[in-house]
Length: 291
Length: 329
Image 1 (cartoon, rainbow over the protein chains, first blue to last red):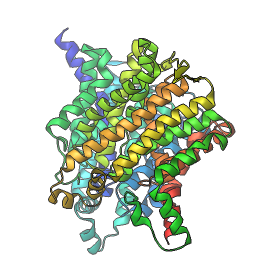
Image 2 (image 1 turned 135 degrees about the vertical axis):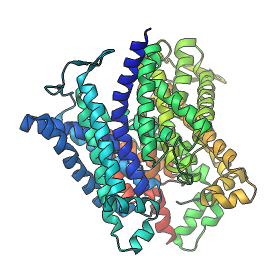
Image 3 (image 1 turned 180 degrees about the vertical axis):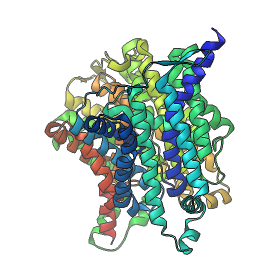
Image 4 (image 1 turned 30 degrees about the vertical axis):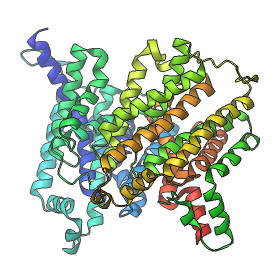
């Protein structure tokens, strides 16, 4: 066991974690504002991959797909929020959760009907195949690209939330929607947009993960659980928590697969259990968010 | 959320109200009479066994979801632990099924003590997420421990031979005999469940659901009450799971799948959460519907999804809950 190998696994973990970060960010963003857990989140992830396949088939251009997917799926998410979830606001915390679970089943089954139950191959885009020499080791170019895109999204999201007037409204809305409403802001419109951004992020993660994980209807199922583990570790509603916990879960998975491969899937649950014992609220969870 | 922990309180004036009050007062008897006739109102007996088992499962789930007000998304783990605990005892250790049954219940009980201990530290949606994540641990463990559980193919060889009790011969391969043997066991569970709801403990549980702060101020140990509710709920679910292993003679890995957690949720919602009869009403409607729909289409999950959405949006009280409201109005 050399130091290089461990470093390589950490890098692999960060790449893996990038997907978790994107999925959990969307989940956390929606929760932070709408206080609903989107159980359909992983199906928007899967839908993203499928829409990516469709756009790629039409245009033949991966970059167009990367741009179009979050917009298309985000729009679908906004329609779902407007038609299905909005009537449930103020009716208890369980109802939207159950509804989104049903919505997830509908999306999954519709995709099976339209695209079939078989998996669809998704090639690594040209120019991103092969590995790059990083000095100490060779690393797959596509995984480097994953890390870069996630970093870019993080910066963009930070600028959007912290430096724009609309971001200010979102942050205020997360803190006290009633006051924001009184100040003359249409809060329901803010929620609609945030739901669109959240589902769009999930979809983007889906199309980014497609060359690694493959495209098949059930691809979202483990993702929901992974995103939950990340959210529980990071703390509900905390964006910083989502980022750090996402990377931590990714690195935990890749390191366990190096030292004790049989335990790979279980390792993230062990991490979650440890965090639950010492910090039930999650690493960066806000007080009161659980009540 | 409808409640009938205190049946006497449901008595209201009106022609139907009186009938409802009588049924509510003798709810165990009422449930057993209806269930006794079940094999004759289903297309085939195996379906009646399924309804009985999933009714019990939903009844146990209802304790935590309907009466304690905590949404668990991980009950498949407890149902599955009961099924695997019983099934492995029979298939791998050649223990007779009537002894394997309590082993299954004990395994599910231990599982719910552990899962409950972690999950109970959180509330609301967090609770749903953590129970789902922990149930996946059980799923992956069973998936990988092939030598014990059969892994992806499920556990085979759960043989249930005929037994002789007091000179009576029970052939478990006869579906009608099997139904009534399981029915007798279920009767004990239903009576016990009713007793728990009636007890001071049941009242505290509902008090916590309605106003946690006040219950805490009254001196009740909220965390312990919740934990116990989760364990009791897990024991009933595990009992249903153990019966399921005996019923099928195999334990499919799907018993541990998250979809199984969703199904029991669906059954409870369909029947009416927090109502005594809701679990069995929901199980009857859901399993009959499933029986018809799986013949018509392979996309049965689409129907389940639409059902979820429609129920939540328009009929959150479920069938029995809506009926109760209609009668009392």
